[in-house]
Image (tube, rainbow, N blue to C red; front, side, top):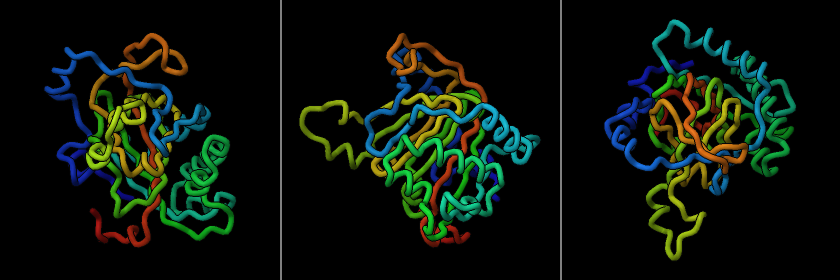
Length: 265
């Protein structure tokens, strides 16, 4: 288990858990972009219309806070385990029991909402070899965010699951520069380089393929988000205040990346 404070969180960012800035204050005079409530058309990005059961979510938050965050000046915890088939008890061997339970719930909830190959990538079928999996717990207070980034290419494999607890927030997606330069011709919805997506409390986000490799994801540090109304986000937009948010992210480690002190770029 590794605990990190703000300064240690991501080596490549000066302040990855960022507070609001002067540039953000200037943007208050601009027309805010309305965040969507459904997944934008980024290949490999999935935000199914499902929610974790409230009782399960509350129990997970209580355990995370009591075990890792209460009384400690940290906002991130990294845990590691080995996962085999979703059908066995060792889906999250080495991880706390409540995270193994969460993985089982996610496997079942996502089964009918993901392409089969994506589901099997996230939750290996019976007989699959063991793999190293990381669970990262991030605690965000109102006004905090995380710098746009692509998860480390030499450390993490394809297939990322993110779950939101306690509060919603807007996650922004930006096409990486090399992909922008390849676009040509008349622009359409699929050619947009920026999307804002509102992640509801207890919602589940999956990044795979293009969404994992060709787009950055980040959260602006602010106190409220401008979000489209209605279930589909097409209604009258409104400002939604942020509360304290806990996110749990599951990522596969590449072979050898689970060795402490190995190459990491």
